[in-house]
Length: 379
Ligand code: FES
Ligand SMILES: [Fe+2]
Image 1 (cartoon, rainbow, N blue to C red):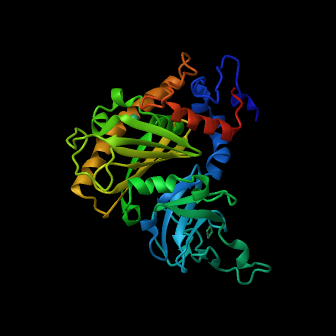
Image 2: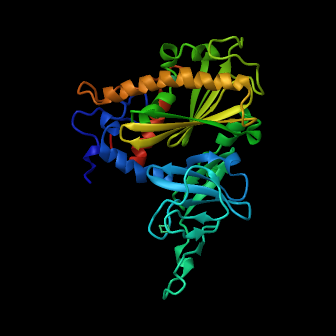
Image 3: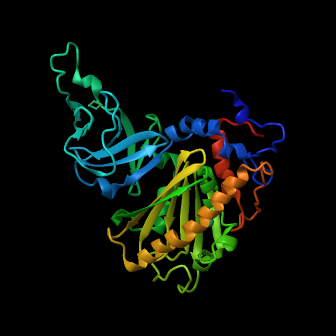
C-alpha cells in the first residue's frame, strides 16, 4: 500500500522526538482502517501479549485462550508440567480447537474429532490410517512462544522475540517492589468493557494524570497527586505516587498494605497496563484489545490472595468498575469523536522540565513507539 497514510502529509505538524517540541500523532492514526491493519504485523504479531494468569493453568491439561488481533491462541499445561502455547486452529480444516478456559486430557477438535496431545502432536485422525503418505507428524499444532512474568502468562507470535525480562529490564523488580507477594496471588475476577474508540486512545489516557484533577475527583483524594510521577524506560513506563497521609478518602477505605504507596501503574508495550492499588495485596491488568479501528475491548483481570477477594479489595475493585473506568471511558469516547472532527488533526503534548504530575511525556513516549513500529515518517 502507499505509505501516504503513515508519513507526514500537507497540513500535518511535525511529530518530534522531543516531547516539548512535538505535536501529537495525526488523527488518522486513530481512525484509518489501513493504519489499524498495519498495526497487526507491525505491533501485535511481534510483541508480548497478556493471555491470562498462571493460577488459571496450574495443572496438567488446564488451558486458557486469548485472541491477539484476530489470531486465536491457547495456552496449556503439558504432561511435563511446562506451559505451551499454540495457534488455536485445527490442522485439518481450520476449526477452532478450544474456547474459554478449561481442562482437557486431549485437545479434541469439535468438527471431525481430530485429537492432539498436550504437546501439540496429532494423536487421532479418523480414517487416515489407510491414506497413502499421510503422516500424523506433519500435522502438529503450530507453536507460539509463552512465558510467565510476575504471574502473568505472556505469549508472543514472533518465534524470535526475546523474553520480556530482556525486553523490559527492571519492570519485574518494580512490580515486586510494589507488590511483594505477587507470587501468592491468584486470579479473582475479570471485568470486561466494550468501548467505541481506538485502542490507542485508551492507552494515551492511561499514560497521563493531567486529566486526573478534572476527571477523577476521588482518585486525586486517594493518592498524593503532587508526588505522582511517570518514568519512561524502554518499552514500558511507570506511574507511581506516594500515599496520602490519611486512608480516609472518597475512593475506598483501606488499611495500609505491605508497601506504603498511593498507586502504582505500569504501561507495557503495546497494550497492557498493570495496576497496584493501596491496601490489601493486589495486582490487576487492564488490557486494551483492538476489536475494530474504533472499537476496543478492555479486560481488567484482578489477582488477589484468594479467589474471592476480601471486602476491602472488593471495595477497590468496585471503585475501579463503577467510578474510575466510567470516567475514563467517557473521556475516551469523546476523544474518538473529536479525532473524526474536521476541526481537529493534532494537538500539543503538555510537558514540563520536571516531568511533574501534570506532564504528558509518557503519552509522547507511547506515540513515538507506535510511529517507530509502523515506520512512519512524521518529522
Ligand atoms: S477441522 Fe478439526 S477435525 Fe476437521
Ligand atoms: Fe483517567
